[in-house]
Image 1 (cartoon, rainbow, N blue to C red):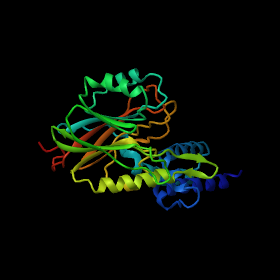
Image 2: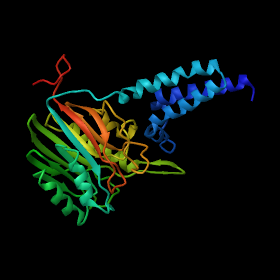
Image 3: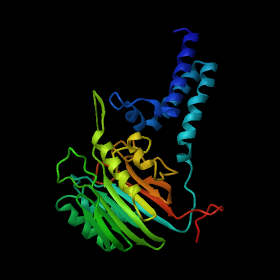
Image 4: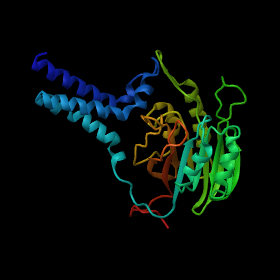
Length: 319
């Protein structure tokens, strides 16, 4: 290929990557939910940009290198903040742990002990089934005297749980026994918090694209419930089977704050490529999210620092 054609190819790909990162919202979902599929792996566009940079540098393509400023700028604007170190926010902070423990986990006791080591104030678990549930209750009970389980999801808390209830997020096509949502009001030292734990339906990627209709329906149902929540501070924890960039979670991300720092790819545990385990908040900031060491699950646990209440002009939490 001639040098001129190579430069135009690099330039074209650079412009394409800039468009994908900066304008992903215009990618239609009508065909195989292509928009959601691209958004699920959006941060990885940065790897493509790096490869293009290496090619442009090796070919000494000045035009290509200049064109690559476009996707670099778009990527930094969208994801650069996640690379920054966590800030010291101080008071009014809760440590929240979220983990899909897997219904096939061979070592629930070891998983529970690993979660204890994170020192969370709240621990949300999904896929709690059979005898394993009793194991989690036994191991976590001493450090977390308050807990509630509804269906296959549960919440363990260091602070009193004032009320709790089932949250119905079952898609219409699913059988009646499907139960993956709960709401609890936790009385923290900083005031009451409405804590939600949810496990949205799984998605599948096939020849027809992304099959996510049940998950999207469940996300809309949960979004409506959270919108009507009377308690001011809300923390949502769960395996949402989606990334925060995916428009399928827009009913939630449009009204809840996402993590300001950290990528924390959580799935699959063997080679994490996306964070589908989420901690979101209202009237609170999720200042940093990180993954914890692998357990017997196919997901990695994630932990986040959640700061309650509005911040004054100084940037530090109000006393």
